[in-house]
Structures are given as structure tokens and as C-alpha cells.
Amino acid sequence: MYNLMYVVKKDNGGFMDTHKNMLTEPIVDLKNVCISYGKDPDVLSNVNLSLDKGSFHFLTGKSGAGKTSLLSMMYLALKPSKGTVFVFGSNIGYAGRDSMAMLRRRIGVVFQDFRLLEHLSAYDNVAVPLRIRGMSENEIKKRVKELLKWVELEQSMDKICSTLSGGEKQRVAIARAVINRPEILLADEPTGNVDNDIAAKLMKLFVELNKLGTTVVIATHSKDLIAEYNYPQIHLENKSVKVIPALRRSAHEN
Amino acid sequence: MKTKWFGFNRSELPLQHDKANLFLQISTAISVFLFVITLAAYFMISSVILSWNKNIIDGLTVQIMPSTDTLSAEENTMRINKVIMCVEGWSGVDRVRLISDQKIKKLMSPWLGSDADINALPLPKLLDVRLKNGKTFDYEAAKESLADVAPYASIDNHGIWLKKLIKSARSLKVLSLFILALVLTASVFSLFYAVGTSLRVHQHIIEILHIMGATDGYIAKQYAHISFVITFISALVGTIIAVVALFAVSMLSAGLESGLIGAASLTGTHWFVLCLMPLLTAVISTGMSYLCVKRTLGKML
Ligand SMILES: Nc1ncnc2c1ncn2[C@@H]1O[C@H](COP(=O)(O)OP(=O)(O)OP(=O)(O)O)[C@@H](O)[C@H]1O
Ligand SMILES: [Mg+2]
Image (spheres, rainbow over the protein chains, first blue to last red):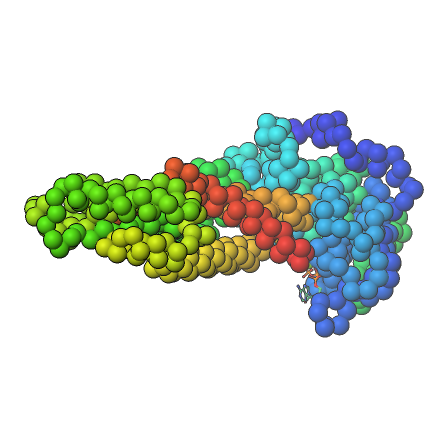
């Protein structure tokens, strides 16, 4: 089985240090943030939200509430129309292009629509973040094969992504997001296309990563998932954000 | 499934399949062909002008008309020596040489046919006069002194019509430079067009790469790589065709031993520069597409 300790032991930069100062400074900090597209009315307005290092949140809200929008702001693909965004303590409004790239390397993203590179094999898709970092092909091979084995895709490793099933694509997308041992993992409906067994296994991956220090945010519609794992919720409603703490929620629900 | 294509099978951007590639290949090959031909023409015109300047401006010919009376050989020699002495007396003369009948025959043969009996014709004698400096030489004084001493001799000053010829050759040179600039401009625009189109086509992939932390340089490098491969191969094709054409033309014109355009040949250095075109083209396009991508991405996500 894929040994997650392997992921951590070999890691030489990033989240172990992060783990140490977990409670000092929020890893994501949104101050009076508004999100809007063009001249449309705000999707979210005046959001104040901070995520502590090593925290785990579900992101909930009706379809169209702005979950994907909020996540894309956190992975630095969307600029707020108002307000300030701090990620890893940096004000991204002032970050240059190359330093934005360096910040993004510390964030793993699972897109709702996967956004795989369809012309490449599963293997090469998972290898992309490592190649961007300039890692040697030998090291890449070792890591990618191991992770693909863990998400049960070793048989389909050399298949071109456009020929994979929805569930297989989702697992490739997740493997790509975690291969870099990100400090923040943002996953948009990551278990929507897989059966319950695999969903449980993927959730275990996220939980393990979180135990090792990764800050996790998972957008989901699944009530089962939310009920099963006792984590706080970031709930989007009426353009605003409400954080529902884990304990209170479970007390309320049980 | 995997076909190796200069290592592009694994690259995140499937640039080797871009539709604009064929356009870029053809336009590069044509541009480089035109560029090499025009550059060769420029080199040839330059060396012709140089040789005209050297050989003809700093020289003149004195023509000694054959006498209408029949003279003895001795009298003929005296007649010629008188002219030679007069010419040698001019200031600014470097060297005077009597052109042999053999040479005159050869020079005349295109007009008379090679088997004409040249001795039977009343041919003029010619003196080839080298001047120290054709530009400062006093032609008027020379003409006057010749008229006094030997009215049967005259100066054939081709310097005047040659100057006109050089002037028109110079304008040809300017024209060829202009054509070079046009070809260059057209190629730059083609390259920018191809790169811009490709960036738009692959925008979604570029966005994903950015989100995963790729720098603009990382993406620009992939463009630089494909640009190098495409333009090097196309430029090589264009250059080879151009060089073959130039060889063919120089072979065909080798038969025409014309004194005027004889100098219109390419030196080793010229050939070297022409053969450098594929590499030069590839290096320049690589750099340009790198910069073009970086500049365009600067406006993106
Ligand atoms: N690129 C875009 N351009 C314009 N409007 C957009 C864009 N992306 C999202 N929106 C709008 O923003 C709002 C929030 O969309 P978003 O995708 O963030 O919702 P969501 O909570 O992720 O929904 P779902 O649960 O269906 O995925 C929607 O009204 C949507 O129409
Ligand atoms: Mg969404």
C-alpha cells in the first residue's frame, strides 16, 4: 500500500515547517473580499475568512453559490473585485508573476471538471507538477508510479487521458494534485464520480495528508461525506460565508 | 500511440500538432529562399561595384588609330612609343602597358567571330594605363597634351559611363536591402501570428499549467523549442534550394566571360554567410517566439 510517510520523509521543503507554526498565522486570509464576473452582480460580497495551517474544511452551498469561485481565488486563478487576499502570508495583489507561480506550486488543486491534459497519458499528467519543478525523470518515475498504484491506476498508467472513464480521470486529477505534497489542497467535488469504496479511499488520502500538515478544503454536495467526517464547514449562502464549527454541528445533528 | 517527435510526445503543450505549423514551415522556407537569393545578389553587386571602382576608375585606355598610310614596322613602333612617352609624362600615372594583339583579338572576337583574320583588319593599338588615383587625375590636361603630341591617339575614358553604371548598381544594392527588410518583416509577422494563434488555441492548457505553478518562462521554453525545430528545418530547405539555384545560375553564366560582370561571383566568405542562414533563422525565431510568448502571457492569468 502507498505509504504516506514516504511522501513526508522525502519532503525537504514546505509543510513540515508549516506544521510547526500551525497556530500562529492563517495560511489563507480573505479580508473584505468580493467576487464578481465582469459587470454581473457579486457572487460573494464582503467575505472575511481565515484558514489556519493544518485545518480541514468542507465547503458547502447550493449549486451556483460560489464554491468554485471561492476555491479559484484561493488557488490564485481569480482576483477579487474588492478586498485583499493573503496566501502563505503574501498579499497576492502585490505578488509578481514569478512569485505567484512559486506560491501556486505549494497548492494542490482538484478541479470540478478535472482539467487534465487530454492528449497525455495518466502517467504524464501526474508528472506535470514535478516536471514544472524541474525534478529528474528518475525521481518522477518513482513517485508517480507509487501514487498511481495507490489510486489503483497502475494498469491504466500509459493510457491517454481522453480514453479514461470519469472515475479514472478523477483519480488522475487527485493524484496530480497531491503528487507535489502541497501545503494547501483545494478539491472541488473530488468524490463525485467514483464508487463508495474508492471515495472512502480518496477521503482517507485527504485525511492522512491533513494529519501530516496539509491544509485541506473540499467542496462537496454530499451530505453523507459531511456527516461521516467531523470537520468544520464553510457554508456559502446569500453571497456570504458562514463557518460552522465541527463540534457544534455534530452536536446539533446527532 | 507514442511517437517520438523531437521529444515533444511528453510535452504538456501539443505544439507539434498545431495547424499553424504548416503555415510557418512553408512561409519560413519561402522567406529564407528569397532572403538567401537576395542576399547573394547583394553580395554580387557589392563585389562588382568594388571591382569596377578598383579596375576601371583607376585606369584608362588610350587608343592609337591605325594610320591610313602604309607604314613600315619601324615607323609604326615609333608612332606608338611617342604616345607611350607622352602618357608616361602625365602626373599620376602608375604604369603603362601595351595590350598585345592577341588580347585585342580575344576582346574583339565576340563581335568579329573567333575565326576572323584579325591581322587583315586595321585594328587600333590599345594602351592600358593604370592611374594612382582615378578620382584626382586631370583628364583635361592629359587630353590636351595628347592632342599636341599625337593627334592620332585618343583617351577612351570609360570612367564617365562607368560612374553612371556604378550609380545604378548602387541603387540595385539599396533595392536588395529593401527587399531583405521586407522579407524579414513578413517573416517576423508570420512568426508572431503563428505563436499568437497557438497561444489562443492552447489557452486552457496554459491556464492549467499556470495554476500548477508553471512560470511564463517554462511555457515560453516549450514554444522556443518547437520554433527552433520548425524554423531550422524549413530554413534548411529554403537555403538548400536557394544555393542550388545560385550554383545553377553561376554555372550557366560561367560561359559568358564578360569583363563587366565577371566579378559578380561569390567568395568563400559569402557562401559561408549564406550557408549560415538556417542556424541564424532558427536562433532568431527561437528568441523571438520566446519573447513573444512571455509578453503575451504577461497579460494572461
Ligand atoms: N467564468 C465565469 N463567468 C461568468 N460567471 C461565472 C463564471 N464562473 C462562475 N460564474 C457564476 O458565478 C456563480 C457561482 O458559480 P460557481 O461555479 O462558483 O458555483 P458553485 O458553487 O461552484 O456551483 P456548483 O455547485 O454547481 O459547482 C454562478 O452564478 C455562475 O454563473
Ligand atoms: Mg462548482
